[in-house]
Structures are given as structure tokens and as C-alpha cells.
Amino acid sequence: MARIRTIKPDFWTSEQVVECSVDARLLFIGIWNFADDAGIHPASVKRLKMEVFPGDDYLSENIRRMVDELIDNGLIIEYEVENKRYWQVTGWVHQKIDKATYKYPNSDGVIETTIRRTVAERSPPEGKGREGKGSNTSQKKFSDEDLKIAQQMFSRIKDLNSGAKEPNFESWANDIRLMRDQDQRTHSDIQQLFEWANQHVFWKANILSPSKLRKQWDTLTIQKNNGPNAEASQDDYSVGAV
Image 1 (cartoon, rainbow, N blue to C red):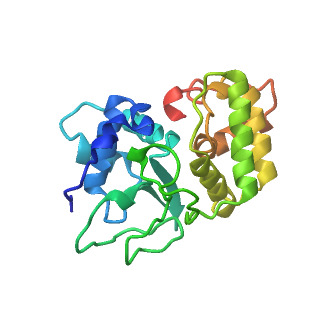
Image 2 (image 1 turned 120 degrees about the vertical axis):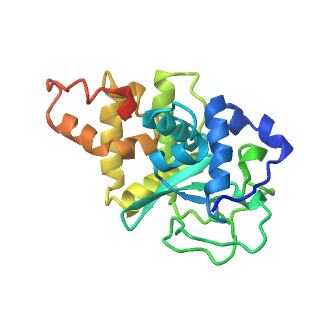
């Protein structure tokens, strides 16, 4: 059931928000209305399109592109529980909810019974960083090594594009944790495949975050294993698939 939500005035000037396209910002607000009271929504592009843009001619790839913008700017995270994928709004604590109801599991596989700071101690409309100086109660369980690899990835991306905008490193580290915990990848696996993609003539311009690496893992692995002279089909190089 759709719910009435609150938009704080500083939403409109948040650096994280304004880095997104106008349609991605509108989609972000729409997710609030259709997420459960923990800010969680099933990761279904078709469902989200029908909820937020029922009368508009957006294609599934357009909606996916908007979602990826929100992920890359740390406004939502994507995760998987029991082979089902979900999106969760990262700054949900600013919503004031009476008689809350919860339908979907958080990234730990638990369906909430009370609102807590499940993703981060910040509210995205406030900009990057946590609420409160020195707060460190994030429920994301990424390791120091996950964070280190996230920072190394961005360093390599910055080598290719000196103007690249600094990401939300906690969100990136959490995506790396998900690759380890849910996909059974090792840190070495993650680093090696990213290094290959970062040097590939096509993929270096498209694998610009851990979430993109995770999404394209199988395609990248096949191409990597086929060797440098393997020819990929046009479908493999479709930007819409990234």
C-alpha cells in the first residue's frame, strides 16, 4: 500500500540528490511512497515503473539507469536475500511513521519490528557523512578490507577520469561485502576482475562502481576467460546492459 511521506526542504539542495538527473530524483521520491516502512522496496524495474511512472513512456532500461544513479550517489542500496533482490533507502530515519508496517527483509535477512538505522547514520538530503559527529553505529557489516578495496577502485577510476566525483565509500564497501557474503567472491577475485575491466577498451568506461561490477560479473568473467583476442557480440557491448 502506498504511504504519505515527508520531504525535507534541504532535499532540494543536497549534493547527493542534485548529482542525479531530474527524472532520477523524481523516481527517488516515488520509491518512498511505495517502499515499506523500513524504506525497502522489491528490486523490480517493471513494478517500479508502473508505480511511479504509469502514464509515461519510460522503458525498463530507463528506470534501471535512474536506479543506478541513485545507487551510485549513495541514496539507495541494492541487496539480495534468499534469491530475491531489494532496494533500501539509506536515509530513511528522517521519516516520521506512526503504526509502522514492515514487509521485506533488510540486508541481514531480517524483517524489521522497529525502525532503526539499518543502512547509515546519515540522511541523504543532508548530504554525505553521518548525522552527529563521531557516530559510528552503521549496521552495514563491511570490513576494513572491503573499504580499502572500494577506495582502490575509485583511485583507478580517477586515473582514467580526474574529474570523477567521489562516491559514497560505505555504500561501495557494502556492495563488496555482498559480493563476498552472497556471491562467494574473494577479495582477490573482486580485485582481479575489476583490474581487467578497468583496462578493457569498453568496460573501463562502464564498470565504474562495485555494484556495476557485481551486476556484470558473469559477462566480464566469460570475456576475460576468452582471452584478449576474443570478439564480443554487439549485445555484450550494449550500454543498456551495464
